[in-house]
Every structure is written in C-alpha cells, then in structure tokens.
Image 1: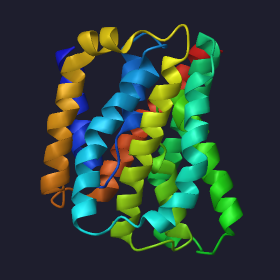
Image 2 (image 1 turned 45 degrees about the vertical axis):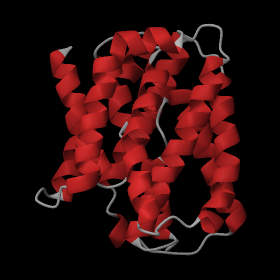
Image 3 (image 1 turned 30 degrees about the horizontal axis):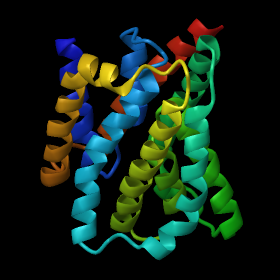
Image 4 (image 1 turned 60 degrees about the horizontal axis):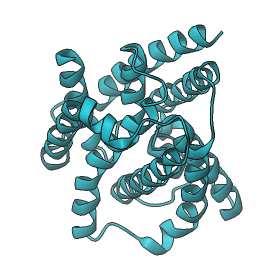
Length: 245
C-alpha cells in the first residue's frame, strides 16, 4: 500500500500539471494491485474529481473556461457517463473493456498530435465522439480527457490552455456522472466503505494534484513523461486483456 500511495501522488502531480485527472493510470495501478474490480471505477473517478477540481478553479479564475463552446460536448457525454456507470459488467468483461480503454489511452499519449494533419469536424461528429468517450468514462473509471484533448488539438478547437481547461471540466463532470451511475448498481461497494479503505490514495492525489496544478512540471520533458506513462498503461492493459481471456 505505501508504494501505491506514492505512485498515486506522483501520477496526480504529473497529470494535474497538464489539466488531466489521471484516471487511466489509477485504474491501471489498481488493477495491477489486485483491487476488487467492482471498486476500481469508483476509486478512479473519485480520484479524478479530487485532482481536477483545483485545475478547474484555476482555469475559471483565469477566464479560460468557455461554457458556450463546451456545452454541446458535455450535454452528450455526461448522461452517457451516467449510463456507463449504471451498466452491470461481469469481471471478465470489465477487464477486457478496461484493457482496451487503457490501450487506447497509451496510444493517445504517444501519438505526436502536432505532426498529424489537422481538419475541422462537424459538430455532430464531435458530439458523437464525446458521447462515446463519456460512456467509456462511466464504464471504466477513465475521465475521458486523455482522449478528447488530442482530438480537440487536431480540429483546432481552441488554443492549448483552453483545451487543458476543457479537459479539466470534462473530466470533472463525466467523473461525477459516472459515480452517480455506479451508485445505482447493486454490486457496487458503498462509497463509505471505499472511502474508509482507500482514503490514503485520495489524500495522496489531493496533495499531488494541488502541487501539480500550482507549480507545473516545466522542468520535466513532456515527451518522456508521456512515454513513461504510456508504457505503464500499456503493460497494465495487456495484463488485463490476458486475464480476461
């Protein structure tokens, strides 16, 4: 547990510095540590909320949150995140789905977005993609910002700081909706039991997230950070897929 606590704090610090919550890596670590699969989405989504809350506040004070531009994408993602949280999954199905989601997360981390051709997408397509990511967020405990941010860069939705602000808000709302959906499942552990058992992880991400959102990580190479995180997530993904099969 002490090693897991330290890893959660480091992950939160890294992700918070770029507006993400870290849900993909939390789920990977929890799965590798053998945590009950029914509790994994709940823990990851709670940690997401703790981490991105500080970033949302900072971006709001900086005037970087454009609710009018965000609304169409959030309107479809939040209800589907709730639906995903409600969806009952068998253990094998959950691990297969989570493994696939983590593989996609690893790809999103290593794809050099700045070198890809950029093009505009119709709003309907963007909303459909946002809805799909929201559903995945509720099912797996991954907030979805790690998927949406590269896409928004590709379509030149806004500048990098506004996209980071969007990612924070997107993760916060989808995570809250996903948790609400999780509560309605009969086999989801009570939140009080989860909080009592895993509060050190939540304290760790609070400390790491606040530090990351305040100081940033400009002294570390973003490229190396992405590769290191992608390697961990991909390793966990392959382990989970093998377990499910």
